[in-house]
Amino acid sequence: MQDVLDLSGDFEIQVQETFEFWLDPSAERTAEIEQAISQANDSIMQTRPVAGLPHAYWVDAGPKEHVRWVLDADEEKVIDAVTRLHARRESALCEGAKYVGSFRAEGLSIPVWDLPKGAGAEAAEAEAESFRARFEEALAATEPLTTLERRARGGIVARQVTLR
Image (cartoon, rainbow, N blue to C red; front, side, top):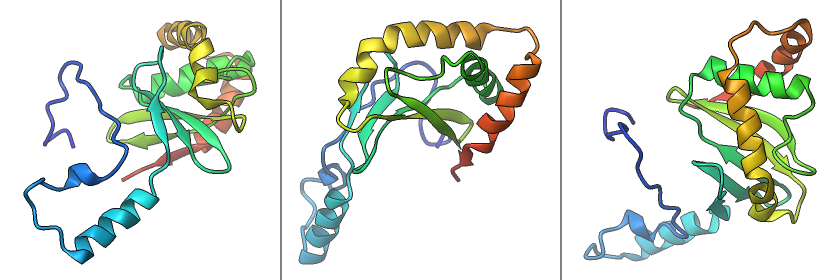
């Protein structure tokens, strides 16, 4: 991906509601293409940005709701930050949320939280500023992990999934 996109600097991400953007408006729309687009659209999980957490997205995954936060910080530092918060019982993004793990993809860490069903992005947005401050403080910490934090880190690392 980094070979195709210029990832230096900030850029705006647009969340699309359908897969119509895949096709050039002037492209021929055969029945097979229409069916493929329709099937792809049926698989879309409702997604929207979370105000207050840059590059964080609320996702309605059917029986669950999640917030996924794409971070460009060093993966090990992100894991340590989540670990520090988790050991202090401060890793919940908002009321009723639970840190469930993270994805690793192309050098990016993507922590994920489950939210109570029906919470919506608004629940995360209501506490985004205070969570972001706690997270950034933990991310900036340079002291070695405590014994409690090292134990918590094992569980955090075990919940990582690498996407290739």
